Length: 74
Image (tube, rainbow, N blue to C red):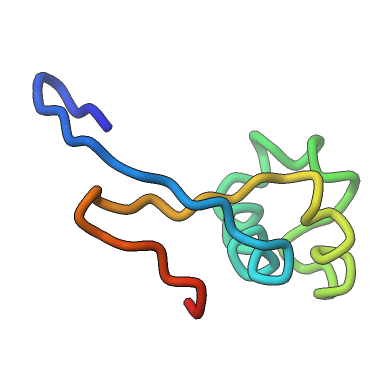
């Protein structure tokens, strides 16, 4: 990850689909004007079933410092 001249090595972990709905909901709430058209009509107000339906089509990653080990239990 880079901010200006500062660089920090990171690791990423792909989250499973069942953990994505609350993250997708918040993303849609914050960025609906810019990204809404890419989510098949699903909005931040959509039922969880709709968020689960689109979850496999939208990658979500956890960013970790390299000293952090992946935690499967969130």
